[in-house]
Image (tube, rainbow, N blue to C red; front, side, top):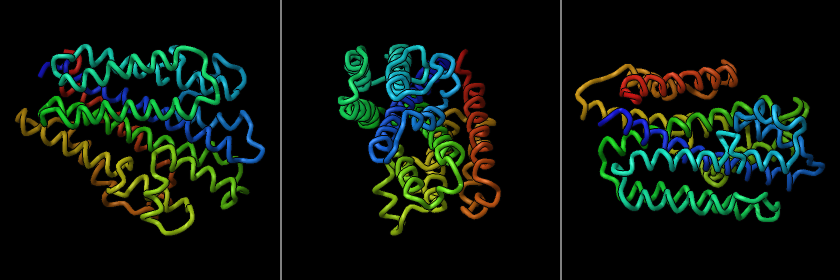
Length: 313
């Protein structure tokens, strides 16, 4: 496969995954602002931090307000991580690799772009936000479903899946890190109703609230939630699950191409570390330090995949 085709598939699905993740973050922010007594516009500071755009937002908006934060995250094309920007980038990559995609996948992608361009074109009405977020989640899910249901399990599928899970792992790790250092305003709030609401918002942002209850028959506990989102191999947005899939897809590429690259060893090492660690080890090391190291290694893997498979050749 040409490197440019692999690059297009990889980034197409990274951007689609990122669009959904941003929509889920906004959904979590809305729920916190609606359920917390005394909620303020400043609650959105943590959401912007989770999305990794707080600094860029501050360059445009001197003060955080709900309306500006939501607009920046969902529809501002000056923000390369906004939902509309991600859908634009995803569609552009899909168009570049159009002949590698099934008709169902291309049509789902194009229809999503058309619908969201209309939906996110005008300034958003706050009353319509819940429905808009549901449309974004539904449309991105349709793209993945069309691809999963119609695509041959070949290199096209492998690169698309690798892009999806590298992006998903990055999102989950960043959300967890921000929770510890931004969302909770003071150590005095640990165990309070505010703390519980914020932990619930994190679970909602990764669609894990109900499944968490199935696994842990208890109230929200930081160590349990960290375990669920880092080490639980059955949770489809956990770091462990993402790396199971990344290792698997890279393994298929190695068999088909007849060679192993540095990316294979890096992915296997990360997956092995996640499998061997217990949550106590991670907490003792420091959750922030662990997640910071994970994000660095996840980014390194992305660069090794890009270099090894000559994405720009």
